[in-house]
Amino acid sequence: MELSTNRVRELFINCSKIPLLLLLLFFFVCSLDTLSSAFQLAGGKVAGDIFKDNAVLSNPVAGLVVGILVTVLVQSSSTSTSIIVSLVSSGLLEVRSAVPIIMGTNIGTSVTNTIVAMMQAGERNDFKRAFAGATIHDCFNWLSVLVLLPMEVATGLMTHLAHIVVTSFNIQTGEDAPELLKVITEPVTKLIIQLDRQVITGIAMGDERMRNRSLVKKWCHTGLVTVQTLNTINEGDITWTTQNLPSEVNIQKCRHLFADAHLSDLTVGLILLAGSLALLCTCLVLLVKLLNSLLQGQVAKVIQKVINTDLPYPFGWLAGYLAMFVGAGMTFVVQSSSVFTSALTPLIGIGVISLERAYPLTLGSNIGTTTTALLAALASPGDKLAAAIQIALCHFFFNILGILLWYPIPVTRVPIRMARALGERTAKYRWFAVLYLLVCFLLLPSLVLGLSLAGWRVMVGVGAPFVGVTVFIALVNLMQAHSPGHLPARLQSWDFLPRWMRSLKPLDRVITKATGCCSTGQASGDDQAAPINAVTTHVDPKIKSVDYAEEDHASSPLMMLFPVGKKYFTCTLGTE
Image (tube, rainbow, N blue to C red; front, side, top):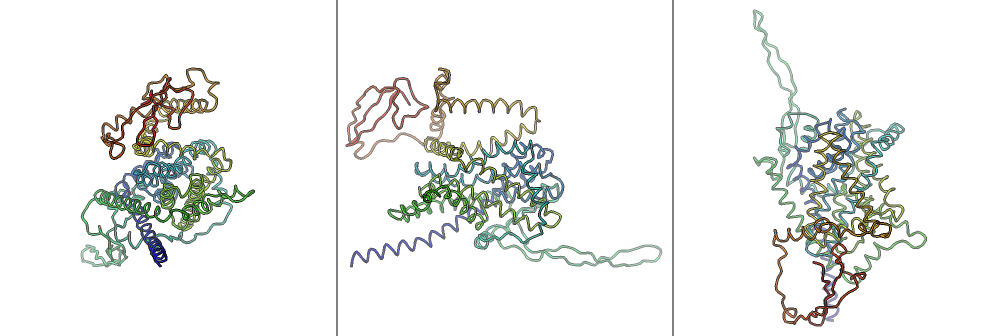
């Protein structure tokens, strides 16, 4: 009886966790939506000003960087895409010039799941997996841009393909894209903040009246009324005439927290940013703990086996494409690739989904977000329909061509290896995640934008040596790993370089000393009481231990065995 009662109690507790899991997921999605609104309030007008300079956008490299920066600023690729559609439809921007910006929005939208991954920094292994799962999207986008942007500039491939599709089919104006997730989340998010997104588009199109207008929506419903005006004509006798003029008046005020707040957009944005980040962190921590408690023992093994196992031979290769279909379908349902990949990140972190399976799911999410953009383009007015569909198709072709480059052949799945290397680096140096975020999504795009503004000569003069050195280092690293004998003796390792040029240890030491976050503590418990006697032995330098970092190796290491309690810990001397 006691055993039966315990089982019933355990079953009841596990069943009650499922509604709690759905509730946390709901608030997690709401926090992402509010985070996007906060970024738009804080940087939306700046984003509009960036789009305003059409001479800069005609430069493909500058257009790519503008797409990254604007999407990072507003945290919404749909907002960036809608601005681009408006610019093209109004004739201020050519479709071919808009394609690099679309590529940039594809990169910028992946910053959200990278931020989400940083919330799992508490546990080292979970952080390594989560960061690798988040950055696999970045690696795919960057590699695709490196190949497809020069191809597009040289041949206009995607522009021509999209133009052929648009002209071949008699496409009629359709309905709005279904917003299935927003039907659930909008009742809550609308009570927090509502934005007038036409302000950013207006600034980008050069409407100076929008510059002094707030992004925070005050009035939700307006209407036209007819006003009678009196005109006086003096020609001897006084003649009165009446004239009916339509005038727009505010009818109903919005109902949200900041509707009556007399605060600047920046202040409201910072308040929402702090609140949404706090809610995001809380929901993510609770989600991870709840998933860990649910996915234990046999349940975890079954789920991992179902998600990560390939199909039986000879159909094993279809499993990845089936995962792409699932990713595209889920993204179509939630109407946001950021939401889907951000929800995927904690599952990768706790080990439920492997990196190899997360990769096709992410690629499918890329396709899913382009299909929703196509449906949204069909809702455009007749004069904007062709341009809107052409841009949406360019976005679609970019992701399809990227998948053809980096998925079908297993050896070409370079983003998986790159993401895994980034995850391992971040697990060793946790501050590297912040550095990666700042460099890839802020500093490097800003530097490239500045160089592009200075002109082609300056950009080529600075960029060509940088690209040449980067390619040289990559080739040498590749040969060091696979065929070091073909390299000169001096290039078979990077030992001849100063330590700060070949290792992150010196920078880690500086950051640790500056923050004081990794101070050495005293041992406790059994470890403190146990005497430590080091047993030193010489080790063949050709043999490397499992934890022997290649970047820190010395010419003649020593292996020391430290007995602590009943266990032995090894330490390689000659390294730091």
